Amino acid sequence: HPQRDILLLLTARLLMRYVDYHNHTYLCEHATGMPEEYIRRALELGLAEIGFSDHAPLPEGLREGITMRPEQIETYIALIEEQREIYRDRIGIRIGFEVDYPLHDSFPASYLTDNRLDYLIGSCHFLEDWAFDHPDFQEEFHRRDIDGVYQQYYGILNGLIQTGHFQILGHLDLVKKFGHRSLRSFEDEISRLGRALSGGSLSVELNTAGLRKPVGEIYPSPRILEILFENNVPVTLGSDSHLPEEVGYEFSRAAEILRSCGYRSISGYQRKKRYDVPL
Ligand code: ZN
Ligand code: FE
Ligand code: FE
Ligand code: ZN
Image (tube, rainbow, N blue to C red):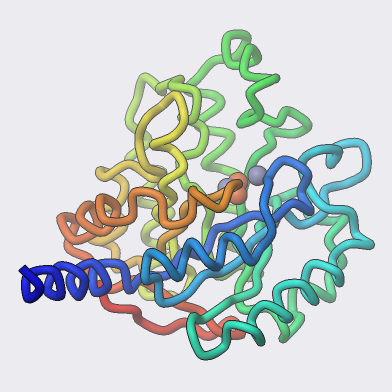
């Protein structure tokens, strides 16, 4: 049935005209594959844009196997700029970083306002010096009060959004990664974040990596996305791929969830300017 095949092909294409703004590179030393392989995967899926957001340098002593070194920042930017040129007629390529808050002192401040960059994702992976999302340190959850961990984490996110440095808030409820659930809902804290972000250009990402982790759920949860929609907070999409095959991971499902929460568009960014991409 050639007609039906063409229709299917068109639908698949239309379904995936999204952006994937959370992709890593080999420079962080825990992701594999060249940027070009990630881009080819994005092309196969029919994504409108792929954005790279590799881990910005953490301080020495914390960054081994987690982020690039400061002297690799320019290598990274040049690498993505080169690919953007090669693929310019076929797919939009964006350059960003995933920056740790509050540990971003080792990321030179000039990069926070560098006009070559399209966006910065602000993420919290540390409570003081505890890398709470690192599989090697998850035992610490059993030594702490879980509600206290959530409280401290959401407090840090409040600080993160006040800085004004970031275009995207990364994996909003990452503390649930290994399945440690708080006893109370923290909806008050989420609503406070929602009000702070209301009507602005800072987007919360729907990050599908949670589906691949012990918690088995997107970041943030559908309930949190509902609260964000009620507060008129923009959203975008990220797979948090550390392998080329993870680009666009479960995006049809993610788009369905966003639509069921009321969203009809997601955010794109070019040189920190936000625009709507239809969902
Ligand atoms: Zn990573
Ligand atoms: Fe992260
Ligand atoms: Fe990431
Ligand atoms: Zn991430």
